[in-house]
Length: 339
Image (cartoon, helix red, strand yellow):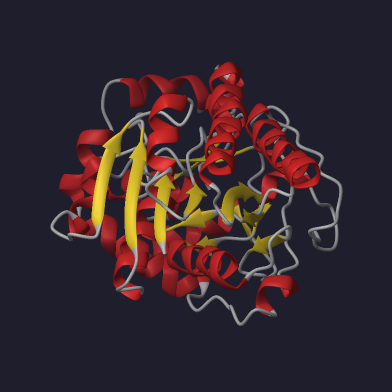
């Protein structure tokens, strides 16, 4: 396949690029990335010398660039997104621009180029908080943050193109993902890097919000399976499928892996509209032959070790604007014990 991977310098997108070039020797990959704060050219260093790879600096909302690149490829895999809930609460307009309008621009270019496959990477957060059971692909979308609403908006635009133009789109909805090369504002790399520096690990509210954590390698093999074996017009959940992990359990696992004390846990004011629980039913994707291979404990050990070994990658990222954002969003609860 000749792929255009948008957002390919980001956390999950760059893993997908590295995996694709490693596992599919006949494929070529063009990456289009705007290089926002979370897009890092260094994430693509392992494939820089590969003749099958090319990087283009640009915005998916720029129709001229997108239309030109779409003519060079067979399919688009859209990872490009503004993706942090806390940032969406501060600047929702940026999320609408990228996650909805940018998706529109990509689909228009794919239609004009005659592509036979388009994959929209979405999130389990579009389902909203799931108090019991597991979300099925047929469940209603009930987003509760500007981020999840923008991703749901992008999905609904994809649905409309399927119905109106027989557009050959597939949607994947991934659960909370972690692993190497993740920008340190997200919970797991934030906790790991803070713990390495003996800084507090900020846990929202009572720390009982549950997430279905999926290692980035498993997420990318799931997307690859949907792209190559999935049915056009279908949606696929991509999650680990376990019982889920609380924020406190994430902190405890990281502290244990790094040999750090529980006193580093710090409870902070809860996020507005914080979803209590996510859980996915992944039977549809598993029927295509996919299954996650990295369990949470192994994945956490590997992730903690990667950040320990790659401090030259993340330390420059935790400066300036990062700490301003951190101070705005992590305010200790008065009288809360550190754990």
